[in-house]
Image (cartoon, rainbow, N blue to C red; front, side, top):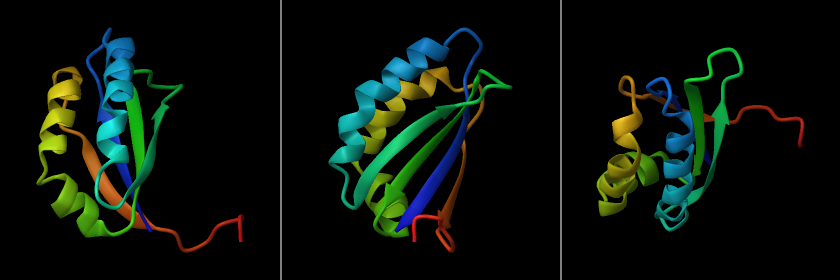
Length: 100
């Protein structure tokens, strides 16, 4: 399982609209090949900063399958206008958890 962490800074004053757009995009992630869902987190200290945490079966499910799909284009059309700068994206794999 791969975790995608995208740090997204939005333009001041667009936070609620951005959140609504992400909610609208939810089906795009749920039907993506290898997609296992996502969470959107908002920074308390920096209210224009969000972290989208998405789960994927494989790295390629995100970097190839989703990013190469029409659903990715639809995702960017829904949320891209709110970005203050391009998102910073990294992928992680779990090495330790308290759930085990």
